[in-house]
Length: 144
Image (tube, rainbow, N blue to C red; front, top):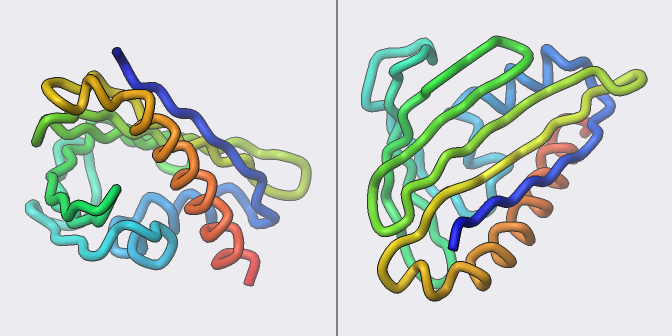
């Protein structure tokens, strides 16, 4: 069963500012509750093909996975994917102007395999909760 979780939030900051902060892997630990560390596996700056390793704590487990940047359009779109572990996933950030601020959309989708496929409904609910909390935290950080 595929997992496809989409969450969005409006942030009262300019789109370029929101996108620059959210797309910078070095900021991930400040707004993603479950991400504990970030390590660049390729040279900065972020570009298509860049690889970044994340260590996260999710559903009682510590996970280490490497995302590859698949597409980046500064201020508009960031697509990254991992094929590590039992749950290959693609994460997409998109930003658009919304009134005086920015609407950010965070989408995670993938095809769990093995035991993860049985637990897909649980994973989807947990991811949806985590994404909403993370976007709220990002809003708090940026709106200060």
